[in-house]
Image 1 (tube, rainbow, N blue to C red):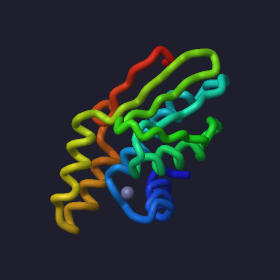
Image 2: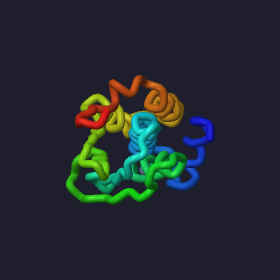
Image 3: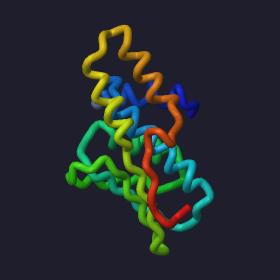
Length: 135
Ligand SMILES: [Zn+2]
């Protein structure tokens, strides 16, 4: 599925367009890209119960990775990825990403779609903090 179509699919499935589901899809697409050539089994856990989980799940479903996403209510905007061979990878939403998501609420109906477009296209490095020994 093309990326633009994925965001439409996400909105349909999730019930609305919102910054956290958008950021979840960004994290999910990033992890799918990072683990594209992996043959080990990976498990995924997102450590907050937010709209982001739907975006991550959608991205995982588009891949050959496990689409099972465990949710832990830890209040951390962090996707933990664990390989069957012990390697780990974590992708967290950056401070900047969380600020962009918070700003969304203050915007009017003209600005909101533009803001979401920015969240869809801004460089991953600005949105996601990476850690781990996998890649
Ligand atoms: Zn939402």
